[in-house]
Length: 468
Image (tube, rainbow, N blue to C red; front, top):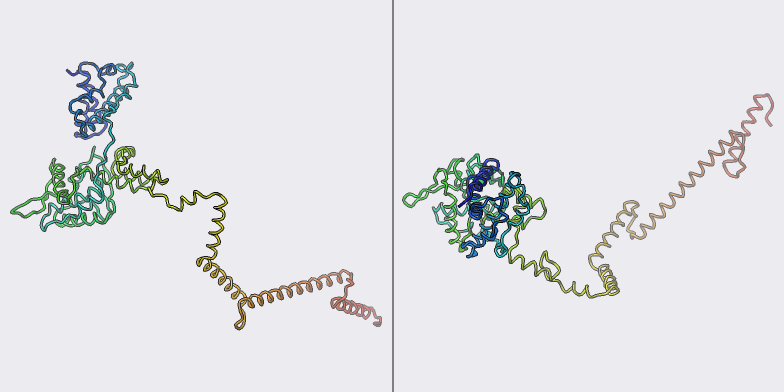
């Protein structure tokens, strides 16, 4: 028997998720199924005494018959049931403080997956090589269904959208010129929890070509509001595209059609959601910065980057083996074996390294590259000298530079002599006007004496005395 109060609490929690959490009806139905085992485990005991119930809830889940098979699907379900129980008890502790006032808050931390069920996740996804092989499957003439399925597989890898969004995507929501997909619930796209987002396509030419071929076909045959993954009508062996609203089980039909496409390509079947995993893994492997990492997370319509990191950033077995082997070579990033030169340089001491460095410098100085650099530098200096003072005739560059230096020296000497002469004349003129005569020999003194005698003669004539 199930305790009635426990059942009402679960019902109230699910109503809260649907109203305030804005979860879709499908998601609420899954959460209800996850909490069903919690109610069966508690039985008639109230949840406020859950810490005293034995066996514990994780041990109870591990003891079920379906877990004994150790199937991967069941282990994933156990993990989700425990995660849902943690959220539910967290809501109870935060809300009803009177009933759960004495309930230990540390109990939520004990709800973990049993260790014997904690096996590493095997990352399964559609690789780029597989997506290209599916996109290049030969399509018989007139088989529009196979052409559509081939384009759908390529678009799933390029966009990373869910299968439910692809089968309900209108033609007008896909813009291949901008590589943009408008996932709008208002336009009929079935997204998870009715989220709206504008996502973008990877730029892979082999896949884009397949998508463009089908896109050009449906745009000429159907209106813009019709489904891009258009339904088919077969009459008398002839296929034609139909303008119909996709049904509620359209995603199941896509999975069946992709199974046939995988068989034609000679590949093992993988579900449509594995294309989304392949898109995420391809984007994360080619991300170089944190901004690239965040862009991949937003393109997957994840609300938190930790969701992307926890689900899609898990390394596969082969990649872990490759990187661990690369650690022994000293280069775990590339996994490249050490070269013999690195080993030889490591074995040398300081003196030998110094000698080796001197030898390398000498060889580099005599190398053709360094000689070419020296010749270019010499030619450049020669051209500068020729522009400053060009040589006459056919003299060599050495004579030209010597002539240039002689001309420059003579011009500087003349400038200095001219400056001295001008300064001497200025000083002599100033001293004469002040009544002082500099007793300096030279041409300047004779001129001053003659001018002084001329002034004295003029004064005597003005005074009426004969000049001497």
